[in-house]
Amino acid sequence: MEKQFRIFRFDPAAGEPHYQTYTVSARPEERILDCLNKIKWEQDGSIGYRMSCAHGVCGSDGMRINGVCALACQKLVRDYADSIEITLEPLPFFKVLKDLIVDMDDFLARIESMRPYLIPADPPPEKEYLQSPEDHKKVEDVIRCILCACCTGACPVMRENPDYVGPAALVWAYRFLYDTRDGEFMTRLEKLNEPNSVWPCVNYFECTRVCPKVIPVTKSINMMKREIKKNLPNPGGE
Picture (cartoon, helix red, strand yellow):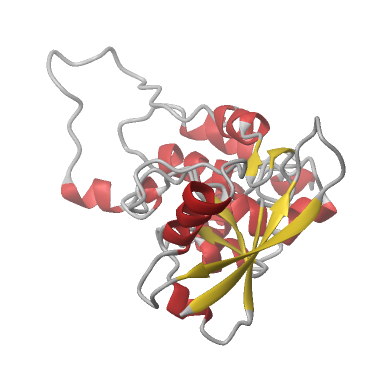
C-alpha cells in the first residue's frame, strides 16, 4: 500500500524549518524506520536521522511519530493504519541539529549529574561485587533504560520547567539509589531532594506511557519521593 510521510526538515545552514511529504510503498508489518530508510535511499538522501541496531536496543532512533515519542524501529506501519499520513518530528525540548537529529549533550549531562555509577562504601573485593537475586530485583526494571530520551521528550514538565533534570536522569538515579552494592544512599537522596530533581514531577505519566522498554518511570520517581520524606528532615525544601 502507499503511505504518506510528512517529515520535519531543518538544516541550520540552509533556511527555515519546514515539512516535506514523501510517498512510500509499504507493507503493514514494515517498521517506520524501514520506510524512512526507503525515503533516504530511494528518494532523498539529504534527510537526517539516527539509527543503529534497528531492533529497539540502542535507542538511537527516538523521535515523535504522529505526536507521540517513540522508537521508529519499534513502530509498524499498521500501527498508523487510520492515519492519512504519518508525521515524523524530532524529540521535543531538544536542540535540532538537522531534521530528526537532536543534540543529546544536555540530556546526557543531566544523567551524568546523578552520578550513574557505583560508589561503594568498602574497598573493592578480590573478585566481583556480589548481589543476591532479591536485591537485583529492586532495580531490574530501571536497568532496561537505553537512553532513547523518549520519556524526556514526552514529559510536559520539561515545557513548564526547562531546568527540571528530567525523567531519564531520575531513572538512572533510582538505579543506583537502590543498588545494594552502592554506599552513597544518603548523599544520593540529598541530590534528589534538590528543587529540580524529583519534586517538579506531578504525575502526568507521559514518560511511563511512551517508554519503549516499559519502565515504570513515574512509579520510580514517586518511590524516591517517599524515600526522601522518610529519611531527610526537609523534603522538598519544607
